[in-house]
Length: 149
Ligand code: IDP
Ligand code: MG
Image (cartoon, rainbow, N blue to C red; front, side, top):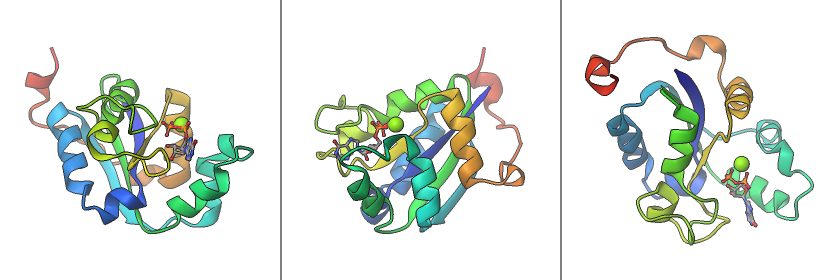
């Protein structure tokens, strides 16, 4: 089992997409381990996106992520990191596959609704930035025996 970090960005929260997005991951069979709505402080936004610090879009990205509250989640399941990235879709929503979250709900690369960790290492790092270990809840979903072989 893997855990991954997922965040509905301020545009997704403002557009009322939090419930739709949770529903997709729940229906897939993934397990919600933590969730919180929060206006992120600058230092955690910079830490989250440190790999992009030198990019021309960084200041705009930081202002976008700080423009309103985000909805932070930890999702758990088999191959959760890769599965969630596929469900999120390509970075540019205009090119993201229909059926993916970005493909269904966005048009602009600078307003792409959602973030998801891109590797197991990023997932561990990002979960550590936003959640204390005790915030990740361990439990079983009663439907696990019919979701997994
Ligand atoms: P990802 O979110 O699909 O992993 P990254 O390349 O890691 O994409 O970029 C992180 C975030 O930075 C994107 O989700 C998007 O919000 C923003 N971003 C990336 N490229 C651009 C750009 O060219 N213009 C504006 N924002 C961008
Ligand atoms: Mg990325």
